[in-house]
Amino acid sequence: MTRFQYLERASQFGGEKCVHSQWDQKLCPEEGECQPQENHCGDMFACGPKGRCIGQQLRCNDEIDCLNQNDEIDCEVLNRRETKCSGMLTIPGAEKATQGYNALSGDFMNRVLDPTYFGGFCEYIYNGEWRKLTYDPFCEHLSYDDAEKYYRKPHNFLSYQIVDVGFVRLSSKVQTAQFKMRSRDLTLDEDMLWALGDLPDQYDFGAYSQFFNEYGTHYVTEGTMGGFLEYVAVVNKNAMERNAGTQSNSAIEDILGFVKGGHTGSSAGSFRIRDAKSYQDWGKSLKYNPALIDFEVLPIYELVRLSTAAEQFRTKLPHLKMAWEEYMQNFNPCRCAACMNNGIQVLSRTDCSCICKNGYTGQACEETERKGPAHGVWSCWSSWSSCLSGRKTRKRECNNPPPKDGGLACQGSSNQKKNC
Image (cartoon, rainbow, N blue to C red):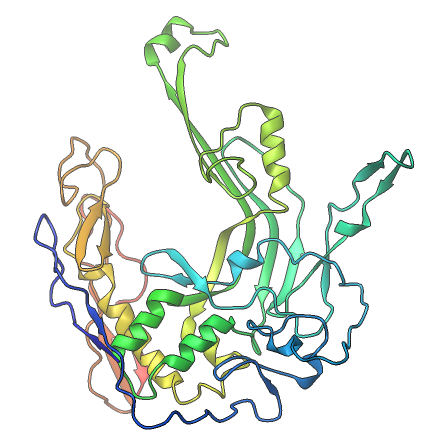
């Protein structure tokens, strides 16, 4: 069982942090003998007591459709079908696109969709770069490698289109593929299925909020794969003046770079482009190890509602939605005091801090010799009003902080309405 301690006020500006965790768990006492759980899959095959339900035709087909591989155990005969998909690699980046996303922290969490589930179907997409000449030393001839002509598409992906790579400058965002998830009958990752099965049947914010801590608040519905590369040169101004009009590199003291996606050779993000060839090699590697660079999301309770497990968790879905709204309010950095001069509020556990823009310091980013506009930031939403004519409302204000010195007002609406 789980109990939760609500945060009355976060620490900030050097204040003392709360000592204990907001969550407290203990084992439930055993009552009587364990009763075997009913089969929740009906005529379908159950991967486990709380696991995935799959069609009987997926049993013993030499493809793993259950996390515990129960569908391929005790098979007297394998109903394996030789298809074009046999031996194909899964589309690049599928693992990254199926992770949950925490919209409050900006972090990707555990997987919410299964990137390796095919449902017995053979669906594939064309790899536009497959026609590369391969040399066979034994036969002494050149040939095209058919093994990379296609990639196999998992069940959860509705579309995945590979695009040509283009390079413009040494600070660039490179697109390698665009994808879109199915809008219904999505297959959840089986670890997430077990986590949903462990949630209580009655509303308990402590237990449901821990689910969001593990799997995020949203899931990715569509996006772009590729990579991002940015380099900033640290320049000696005096050396530049002395070498004016020349092409000398003596003025460049250091190069700071950030790389996302591709094969970086060493630790991610620290790869250095040394010449045109290393830049081209990085660009080519994006086809095989892309990053998720642009994406759109929906709340995670919508994923459960649109999944093949919707009926299985029908009674828990209203609790999941209610807990999601409470989680987005309780762990939102809008609860922090204002950060000045376009500083970004961060709520980490029970402590607030400010991430300052370059040129600004201080606990609230209040210290600077610069002058410039400061944009407005929304406060938290108020509580919902009581029901009136079948509708209730809530509001927020652009005062955390308000715009200053010609800064922009907050974007979006200050009021929300919903049916009771």
